Length: 79
Image 1 (spheres, rainbow, N blue to C red):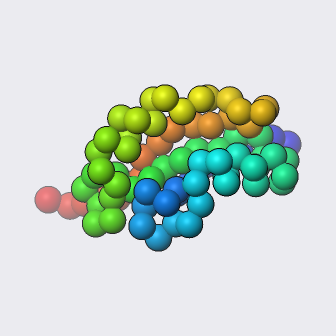
Image 2: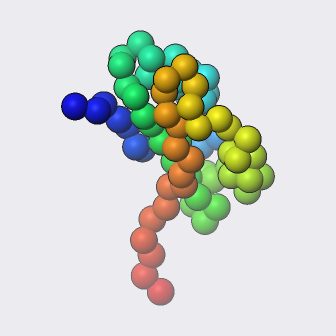
């Protein structure tokens, strides 16, 4: 089995309390090999500034054996 978590928010989404560094440390502690940060997208009420998503490009993809995916959270809307 390959333990992963593909839906996590950082403090950039207003209801979360952890940083990228916090998640890396916890993933190592729990043996999680891969996780995705999926902060709320620009059209959501508590979304981070769009620069947050641009700056995600500088995040490393692998830290101490833990893979980091960059994502974005969103919702379907009817028009």
